[in-house]
Length: 117
Image (cartoon, rainbow, N blue to C red; front, side, top):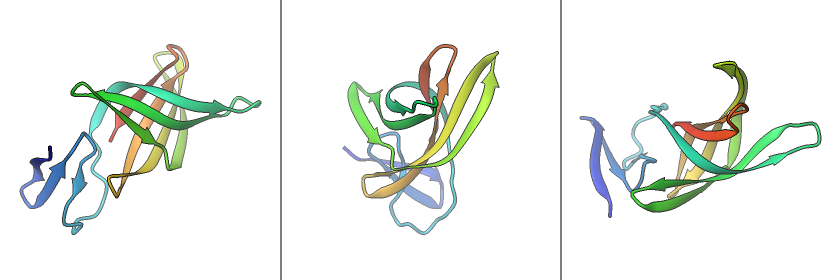
């Protein structure tokens, strides 16, 4: 079921799940919301220890949504609370629209988060 939502009064949006897309495609730019939700991730790790996320699953309203990562736009290494973290800004084609979001791997807890979308 599609829910009618409005991010701003002049940008009508339709929402099928948490990845919101603009119906009329008249606006530009990236408006990312902070989420910090745990996700199940499938990733590759090379012999050198380079981590590459492939796809992830997230639970929303009792349903599982699987998102395949199309492109990795940016990778950042940080320290968060004494633990090394890897942040990936990614892009995927979801419902015919390209969406940009950020996933983070925490090396201390070995957990993945959907941080921003």
